[in-house]
Image (cartoon, helix red, strand yellow):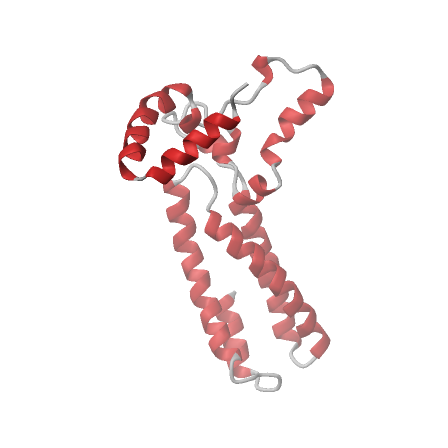
Length: 189
């Protein structure tokens, strides 16, 4: 679709500026980059791609303003229609990229926490907490109702890594020790 927009902008010269064709060419290149990056992120990460989600979110917002302007200009109806379709497709890509991959995870990730598989949009509004909040609204919560925590925050992982980090901190700088001393002093009963 971006290639079709590039061709249309090259053919229609009525409302074209000197930056229109380079911008359309860059838009075509970014569409190709999105395909590559989406595939790579989908294979290598538990959560949806933060970079793609932010880019597509900002892109959709700016494209909506551009679509409005193209419809108001009334010079190139074909460009306005194609750009509207392109923006709708980009919005669909945003929705697909923001979707959690929990249902397609392999057995190597037996039970990831909701926070681990949530994308940037879901984490920014704390949407991964909605099931817990709804459950708490319906009944009194117990420990078994709580969501699993991130594997990096489990007690076993912290117990093995904290002593080595503490030793590194003690030998590297005194400011780190001061921070921990102040923190320990403030948390005394």
